[in-house]
Image (cartoon, rainbow, N blue to C red):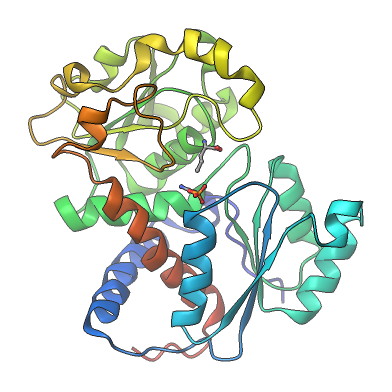
Length: 305
Ligand code: CP
Ligand code: NVA
């Protein structure tokens, strides 16, 4: 049987994603109560990181430990992957020993190829194109604060990057309206936008996108791998900072999200990210709970609630 992978939000149905969010909230509550729940005893998650990480590594590793399993951190510096062993071979070998593989890498095509040759579930922990695990946490954060997100207006301000693409997929799957404001040269992938149809609209003006929105989201201007473009991007994005003036155009009770790490004074002002509308700390913590729900769904054959 082919294993189930989580490479983008489109790999699961809308109902399954909503189910994951609900389960994440429940697992968070259990954790708060100190309840021991170890459905993944003796299960091992391999974590391949070709880019840096704080939240993703700690949340997956902690999540596996809390579920009774184990996580292996694999850096390309110390494994044969970094010395050019073919991905197909690594996929076959690793998946013969572990129960799931989590990968953070550059080209999305690499994770697709790995998944094709893996006999166990593969989880996308960020590629240049998508960051679906972050969206599980973002959705959980919204549901906890405001209930269902169906029909809500969300504004994504900044770069048409991996986070933006995953927001577009989330808009399709969860049924919210997404307005994306980017400088003209930094729009999201037209194919991803087109597949989302009416759900998504593109804007040149951050003010237009944010007007009346209930959730305002941004991300860094230069993603991992784009460090050499930092200067040029600072110029291109200078009118795209989420500051108090921009937030004032959103709904009165609008929330602010950012996947972190953030650059205060660039994509967001300190006043906004450290202010009362910001839910970034819940969002970061929810990586743990949402991914536990994901690991449980992919790995626990006998979920006993
Ligand atoms: N948001 C996020 O993925 O953070 P890390 O890069 O620290 O994992
Ligand atoms: N867009 C950012 C997200 C980091 C979590 C990056 O890819 O670096």
